Length: 140
Image (cartoon, rainbow, N blue to C red; front, side, top):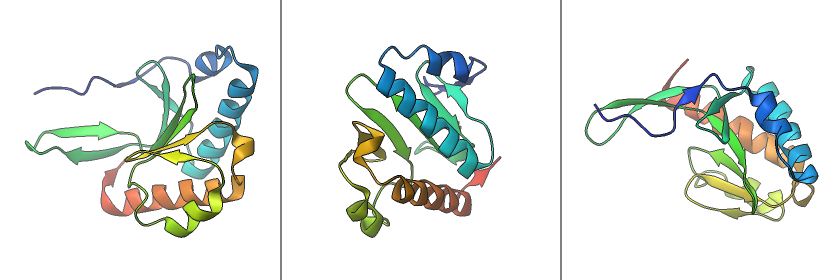
């Protein structure tokens, strides 16, 4: 069975966040870590070398193989911070319109700075996406 390249591991989230060189990006990452931990009801875990993920769900790929992935998470990248909204954005048009300055990919929300977005809207978006994932998938 082929495994996903990015796996949950025991690396320290704290050490990873503290190693972010850009002071503003580090501050944003620490704030996102606290926000997501509070919403998910559990501490983040490292996935690969640069993603902090919260919670976990299981899904079957097109070939029927079972994989595990995080419910939500973030990665402080050089250009912007990626926030993972795994159901995608189709059901969140109203929230997205209120969020503030951002870009999106299929399941990624790209934020240059947390100051660019409305944190209460981001919190609602993350909470709703977690609830939607928990309703759709086996979690644990």
